[in-house]
Structures are given as structure tokens and as C-alpha cells.
Image 1 (cartoon, one colour):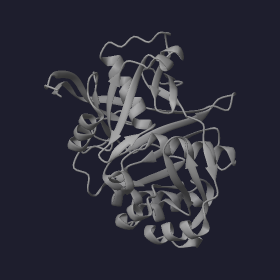
Image 2 (image 1 turned 60 degrees about the vertical axis):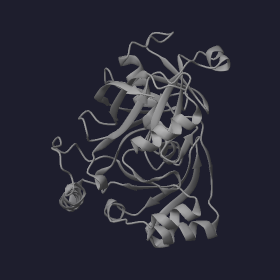
Image 3 (image 1 turned 30 degrees about the horizontal axis):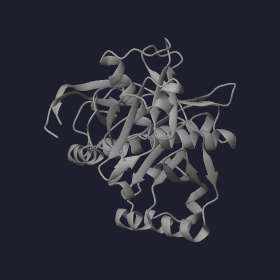
Image 4 (image 1 turned 60 degrees about the horizontal axis):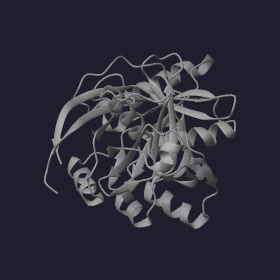
Length: 320
């Protein structure tokens, strides 16, 4: 089909400062585009995800969806992803989108209709309802192969779960943020295994006799994390509860800066097992010179919500 101008935004997700989070390309009118054209454009942007806004399907409209989104990585389509959910919602609202119900946005994607609402205590910041999680104990042989590709010794892993809330991740909880920041995975091996890996570490306790050691450890981590950064960043926030990295070579992204779907599944797992409280803050992206901040909470109905700031970096039109 002939090219035409379509409204376009590039936003930065999980940050209040431009260029410190995870960028997302949003084509705000994807009508008439073939799947091949969408994939080609997503490959060209070379961002971890590119989204296309469409009218809801009849089934989605019946479930209250305000719009539909298709989500592509450079290597394929995803049924759901977190930072594209928040980023697309922000772009849709900024482009004049009006939800059917005030204060609630319902976004249709391949896993169904995902609800978004304002983040508690943060006006203008949205949170999405994490899709249901399926988790299982990983196969021992497969886990051993992944640990080898990650350069991790079994003793450094305190827990492991296969996590699926649309995207599938092997979740690893490891011994320290320092171990996390030092990881240099074999991405070719992970791609051959077909395994996306999310790695998390609890922050060092910063109280009592441990305070000085924790501050020194954090200073070391941050110095190493930001040594490649080329843009200014805000003063360091309080120590987060969880540090996260995400490796997704099977879908063409060696390391994702900030990952909503992974943080959602980690929260569902770690809250359920009592490892983390029902409200906490995670950080991700420091190894790539970013400073993503993700806010996780669980309500009285046991629904986990994943929130973060979104800022616009580019607004205009794209020829597609």
C-alpha cells in the first residue's frame, strides 16, 4: 500500500527524566498496516519495542477496550509487554484519546484487555494491572545450561522460577546487586537456548552496623553502572528494594533497559512468597546508563499493579 503520514510519538518509560528510561516508538494510527509492515518498521527503529494503535476488536470492544495495541520487538510480536503498555497509554492520552470510563484506560492486546489507572500518590503517572501469572519450577538441566550462559554459579542463585504472564521469563533471584551488575552473559548461548532471563537481587540492608557497608556497596555499583552514561541524571534516589536486569536475546534484544512485564511477574512471585512486601520500588537499567524506576503494589483483591512515569521525547509524523 502507498505510504501515508501517521501520528507518531517516541516516549521514555519508567522515568521522569527524558533519556533515562526505556524508549518506545508509538505509531498512533496503525490502521491498514500489514503485520509485515509493522515488523519491518519495528526492526528499523531497533528499539526493544514498537507499538501500533488500532481500533479494538469486536471482542475487545465488548470487554470495554478503548483501543487495541500490537507490540513488536525487532525480532517478533509480543502478546503483552509492560513498558509498551504504559508508554502507549501515555501517547494515546496525549494524542487526544478519551477513555470510556473516567480515570480508567482499557487497552486490548493479545492476552486480553489490560486495565490502567492513575498510580496512587503520583498524579499523571499510570499503573497497569499485571496479567495473571503462571509459574513453575524450571527443569534442572535447562536451568544449569542457563546459569552457565549467564556466568552464574548455582550457589549465587537463591531462587529460580519459570514465569509466564504473556511473555515467558526464567526468573533468577541472586545473592547481591554487585553480582547482578557484574553479569556479562553469553547472549549467543541464551539465544540458542531460546530463553529470556530476568535476574533480580534484593538491596543490601541499610541499617544498624550494615549502613556503612551498604552505602559503600551502592556507591561502587552506581559508579560502575553510570561510567558509560553520556547524559546528566538526577541525584540518586533512595536505595530501591530490588535491582533488576533483563536479557532477551531470543527476541533480538540482548539487554532491555527497563522491563514492565518482567517486573510484574517478579512482583507476583516475590510478594506471594513473602520475599518482598506488597508495596516496593524496583530499579533497572543502570548497566546501560539508564535509571529506570518501577513502582509495584498489590491491592486488597491481590491484584498487582505496575506503575512508572512516562515522558515524551519525540512527537510528529511517520511515513508508513
